[in-house]
Image 1 (spheres, helix red, strand yellow):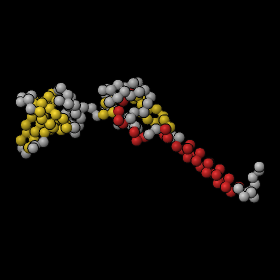
Image 2 (cartoon, rainbow, N blue to C red; image 1 turned 90 degrees about the horizontal axis):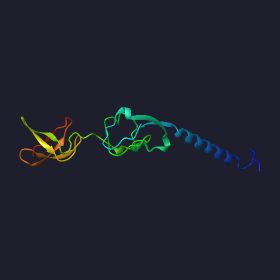
Image 3 (cartoon, rainbow, N blue to C red; image 1 turned 60 degrees about the vertical axis):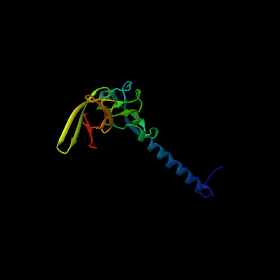
Image 4 (cartoon, one colour; image 1 turned 60 degrees about the horizontal axis):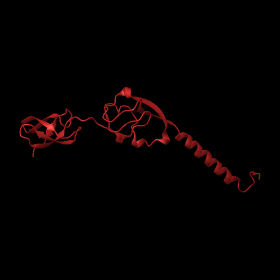
Length: 161
């Protein structure tokens, strides 16, 4: 069957074909490449990620859930792998953590400040903790379990009661 401009279905057919062309163009635009950092070799849990451990790899943007993965190297360098990171695969945000500043079983400096009074003591960390985490420690002199917040220099700050 031949369609001519006088046929009553010609305008509909032209609209459908034009719509298909628009969809095809949109799909091609969505197929743009996205450069993501991926491991050069397998990275194991506990490894600190260095820049030389990463390489860039192109992915089709529409095939990657961008809100669940790291899109830049800068966000990964210096972080610690919580799970095994496979070679050439995008790195999920949930597989990475900040390094611990206080380590379980190791001595930590505890600082108590109130007004002009500052008391500093050593304590044994009972759990790991990163910046801003509240951790439990055992006072080495009295054996009392205390809690405090990990600060940027790796010490633990106790708040006044």
